[in-house]
Length: 291
Image (cartoon, rainbow, N blue to C red; front, side):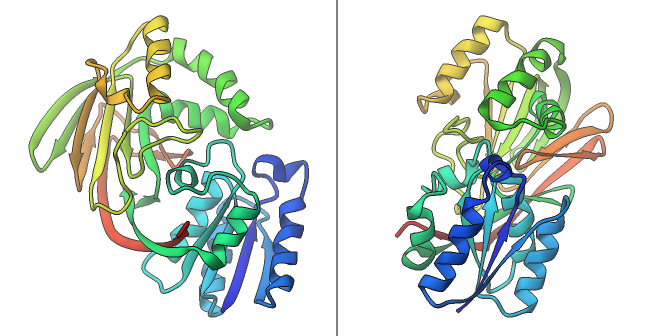
C-alpha cells in the first residue's frame, strides 16, 4: 500500500519539536512501506497535498496535526477510496479523541496498520466541510481570536475565551429542520458530528459520526458561575441535562441570523452569509480507527 504522511509543522508541539516527522519516516522504513512524508507550507496547503496523494495512488493518507490539519486533509479524501489516518497533536483533537485516537504516541502509528477502516459522515456548512463540529456565536468568536495566536494549547483557549465570554452578545437565530422551526436566543450554537469539541469536552453526549445525523446544541447567555457549572458538565457526559440548553437531532439544518458573520468548521474560522445551510454526506470518509 502506498502511504503519504502530511505533517503540519505549526500544529501543537510540532512547532517546537519536529519529532513526529522523524517518527513517520522511521515508520515507513521499519515497515518497508511505499511512503513519503511531506510538510505543509501555508493555510489550506494540506488539502492540496492530500489531493495530490490521491492522484498518486496512495491508499492511506495520514494527517499529523490538529483539527485544522485533520479538516484540510480529510476534505480531499471525501468520496475517494483512500483511507484517512490521523496522528493528532493539536490543541483539542476533537475527532481523534471521539474515535479513540487520543494522542500522537506509538499507538496512533500502530493502528495505521492494525486498526480498521470506519466510514464516517461528512458535514457541510455553506459548502465548508467539517468532520467534528461547526458552530456560530461565542465559539466562532473564539476560533477567530485563537487563529491569531502564536501560542496555542488549552491555555490559549482560556486566554482568548475569557475576554470573549464577557464581550460576546447572544443573537436571535431561527433554526429550520425536518421537524419544523425553532427560534433561539443563542450565545453559542454548535452542530456536532462527534460528541465533543476536543480535550474531552463532550457537548453532545451520545453523538456518533456514523449515524447519518447531527446534534445541534444551543446555549443561551448565562452568568459566570452558570458557565462554570456548564464547564463541569462538559467533562461528565451530562451537558445536555442542563435545562437551559436546547438540543435538536436531524440530518440537516438551516440557521438564519440577522447578518453575515463568522462560523467555525472544526475550529477553523470562516466568514460566510447570514443563512447557514448544514447538510450531510453519509459514510463519505473512511478513517482508520482502533480495532
